[in-house]
Every structure is written in structure tokens, then in C-alpha cells.
Amino acid sequence: MKVIVTAPRGKMGKLITQVAASRDDMELVAGIGPKGRDYIGTDLGTVAMVGKELHVPVVDDLESVIDKCDVIIDFSTKEMAMEVLDLAIRHKKGLVCGSTGFSDEEMKRFEDAASSIPMLYAANTSKLVNVMNKVLEFITKTVGEELDIEILEMHDQWKKDAPSGTSKEMGETMAHALGKELSDIAVYGREEVSPREPGTIGYHSLRAGNIPSSHTVFFGGMGERLEITHHCYNWECFARGACDCAAYLANKGPGYYTIKDVLHLS
Image (tube, rainbow, N blue to C red):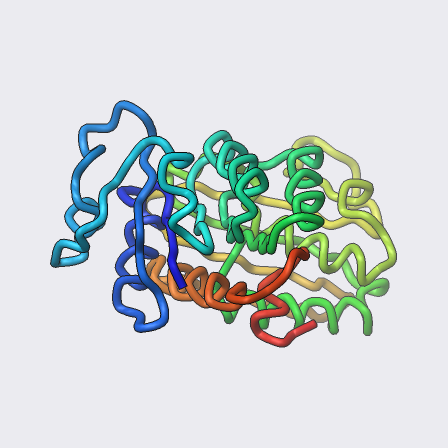
């Protein structure tokens, strides 16, 4: 499988490039950087600190190299991701997108793309996070209407969006298990408010230091509490999961896929 990685100097793009370069089932054919960066034209292996040259360039024009690949892996910004999406549709290329911060309308564009390309969107490509989502779904379906649900998510000081895309996926999973939409029951932070409204899902976001990722879901009952937590110590787990997602799209036809399909959790 031939792969293009976006943002190879970024914290995720760099790790994805390193993992992809180590796999026998993947061939990196280009990296895509934002226009104006001083590393444009440099070997991808050098830019992503792979430890060797890969003999493929980092360019700032995806359209000039897109036909060399089978799948694009995009962990960049939402602005760059939308440009990548448009080009993937135009050139009929598979796309794994892990960028976050999209509006509902922008997410709809990813879903619509599935009619013409293999499209896999995953706000979090950690295998254990997605196993956790399955556990959250089970708990919510079983006793969720009896409990108060709160989500606490922590990330590094540089993360641009809040709440995190992962916590939104968790909330959506639990809301759907309750037969509701997250947009109707989410409460973001609290200040000088009356007692908690039953049936809502509370969100709390912390940003500090270089915390890679931490998510805790609290199920609060009367006289007892259940906490489900996932801690990420570095971003390698996401990079490995992203490459697994790309490999999953090999020989897949158009459709909207998720990491649940990759892990057979559907």
C-alpha cells in the first residue's frame, strides 16, 4: 500500500511517518507540509526524524503527488484537513482522518465523501480508547438512565479544540445509548448554576503542560460511583492505530468506516 502523510513535522504526523516507515505493508510516497515551511523539498525521513532518508520529498502541493498513493493519512488542522478531503474525493483516494475540531456541517462532508471514496474518520486511533467506548456503551445501555454522567478530559497546553474530539465521541456513544443526541444533552462546564439537570452529560476540559491525553468518564449514583479512565503516556499508540486504519482501507470500496470496523467492535 502506498501512503501519503500530512503534517510530517507535527507531533502526530512525525510519529505516523516513523511507524509507517517501519511496516513492510506500507510504502511512503510523499509528505505534505503547509506552504511556506522551511522543510519543504527536504526528504521525508529527515523531516520526520525517521533515522534514515526515505528518498521521497515533503511538498506543499498535495495535488502534485496525490496520484502516487492509495491512501492519505491526515492528522493536521481542520483547515488543511478540509483541503485534503476535497482532493481525496476528486482523485478517488482513500482517506484516514484523525484531525479534530470540526463543526457538524464539516463532519457531514466526511460522511458524504463515503459515497465516492473509502473514508475512515477516527478522532482517536488508540485501540484501548475504542475498547473503552464499547464499555461505556454497555454501561449506559444497562444503567445509564439511573446515573449522572460526567466527562473529564486533559490534554497538553497546545491543543486547539475543547472539548476533545475523543470526549465528543465518548459522549455521542453514550447519548445514542440513551436514545438521544449529544447536542441536546451536553453541558460544558458549570458556574453559578442550579442543581444538576437529570439526563445531561457534563464536560470539563483541562489544558496543562505536555499531558498527551487523559479521559475519565464518571457514572455517579446514590452512594456509589464508577470511573472509567484511559491515560495515554505518549502519542505512539495513536500513530500505530492510524497506520492500522490505513492498512484496513486496502482494497476497500467507497464507504464510511470507523476504527470499530478495524477492531471488529461494531
